[in-house]
Amino acid sequence: MTIDELNKELLACRRCPRLVEWRERVAREKRRAYQDWDYWGKPVPGFGDPHARVFVVGLAPGAHGSNRTGRQFTGDSSGDFLYPALFRAGFASQPTSTFRDDGLILTNLYTAPICRCAPPGNKPTPQEKANCQPYLRIELNIIQPKVIVALGRIAFDGILPLVAPNGYHVSFAHNTSHRLPSGCWLVCSYHPSRQNTQTGRLNNKMFDQVWNTARGLIEN
Image 1 (cartoon, rainbow, N blue to C red):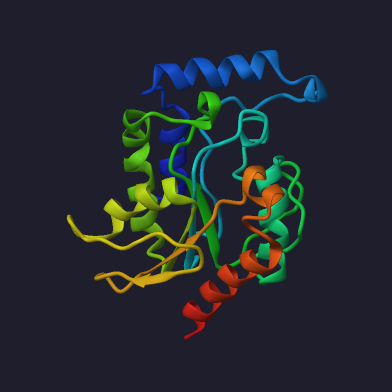
Image 2 (image 1 turned 180 degrees about the vertical axis):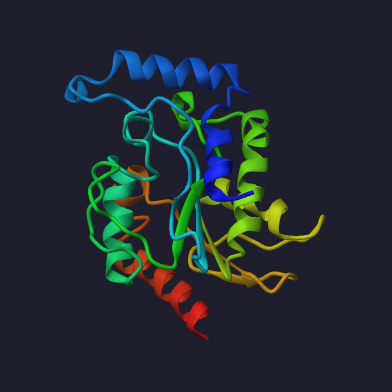
């Protein structure tokens, strides 16, 4: 299966009734600031370089972020923090990400969420995350990255069963890297959510260290 074939199947997915109802209701009702937008309101596909050596895993689309724009980390506060860091590290062609056709290009990096539909309260259920797991597994098999960066503990917990043997255990801590039995590296980072960036739990220097780690692993 190619990425395009996978995305065609993904965009038709209605496995999770709660998420389908929520994403479509948000797209109809909209936020006042975005009344002129034609919301995406569908599952959000992965984005980036299909030949990437770095695969970034996030949590889920924001209701008025990528559920609005249709592109991962685009049009929300997490992307406002993420994409400047990727630009500084040489993975992104520009530091801003506002809409799907704004010219942003990712080089040697691909990003996808654990859960493809915006969940109420940003909290997908375990079953909803499990329903999305096959899409992520196929993307990983297609891209075959050398480094996986997990943004946040939920992404870390979601990706580990897909890339490590049953019972394999590593701990989550910011800017730690783990060599998996497959030879792939798993790098951990706090999620660039507003809750983390506005409280100082994650700052630019800390985030740059993550991307410098990823860059060093693929270059060595």
